[in-house]
Image 1: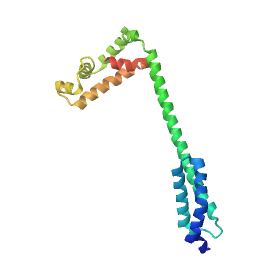
Image 2: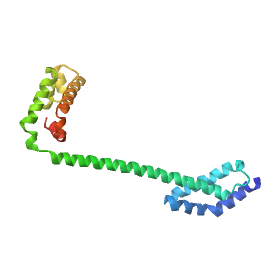
Image 3: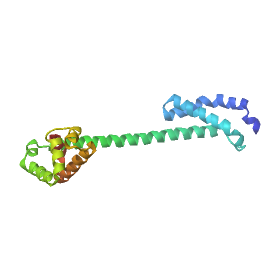
Image 4: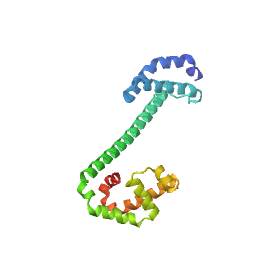
Length: 188
């Protein structure tokens, strides 16, 4: 059987089936270069493994099986990519719809109503004096964190901590007004 796997027989096999297998692969992967790569890899695998193959191995079937599996893996990979792309698109559409709904629900008159301001004021009053002062310097007076840090003789990380603490408490207090929260934090 070794004589079948010599270079001369391999070349005959290659010349007879190479283009056929490429056409087979193209019918699935739709890209000539990818199909050619798969067929070349299949022929190379056959050549490398031929000494270990059983004597009753049909070389064209062996090579075509490799091509088939490479095409199958390629298509399954494309399917996964499409699922991920679809999931990302669905999430993006959901985010967009949420933004539209939030904006449609936004009532500027309500944002500036006494009820919202009262909740904000009472929430800020619950904070320690230093946190209140830092938050008001940031959101009301418009100072940057670095300026506040210098004025308060604190690190910028401390300023970030105090602001974060105030925002967390405000988010909790205003959770019933979730649809207007993005607007509220722009207003500060």
